[in-house]
Length: 334
Ligand SMILES: [Zn+2]
Image 1 (cartoon, rainbow, N blue to C red):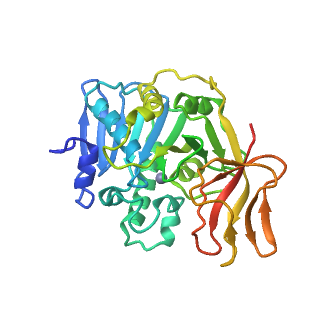
Image 2 (cartoon, rainbow, N blue to C red):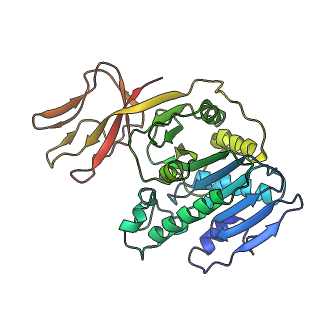
Image 3 (cartoon, helix red, strand yellow):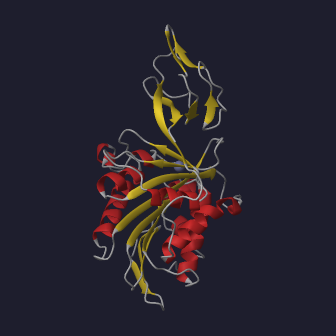
């Protein structure tokens, strides 16, 4: 499937700019395998299945641990050491940033979905790729057999910052929707005990699949950014085994065995002027706790203090231009 290359990572790195010829094959168990593009590969079992799952990584190309985990799952599927019981589309989203070992090359790809790519320079590679990925995913779901009753998407990332909670999931906002217990159970299986429920529409890859493709979608933050080969993959055993059980079609619990803590945004921090001061240190970890009364920012007479219950800070970044988001304050809701 990957010519002379050892795996999909090597193939994708070597073929980032190569004109792509679609490849197609059948495994001995009857599973149909299609390499749709560099870094985009589809597995379809020839047995009745009830789930279509998109598993993506490398939207930020330097977030290597999920790419390595997913490459191994693909290897095992091709070697038929991993059972394929459900339809799966694997995506290594941003080959050029993988080659550059950077988060992105021209534009943060995770702001280009939900059609946002249409408002950008269409000659940029990441812009063209976001448009193609939307089409691949939409086709993948549209082509599913009538037996499929469940659409899933897990977009796997690692964070730049330390986190007081090692792993967390972001659930994109869709009006009038609540997260099902079965998905909390999946997160628990993946050793993810923290869930951030978003309250406004975004333009991330998981926002696209949840808002336009009716998928249960998550952005998963699975640990810290490291270079290829420098990851301790044992820290990712939870997500690895949960994905493998899902792909095999093994029964997964309907309810979480452990508590999955849910958080919602209570305040969006914005850099409001040049004089604006962010009163937390640069190195503050994601999900750091602040007690009632703690002052978070100040801008002249304006300020923000934590309310009557503890709040938690995520994605702090004081160094954004005026008018942009510098972090989110959260409250625990259950
Ligand atoms: Zn990322």
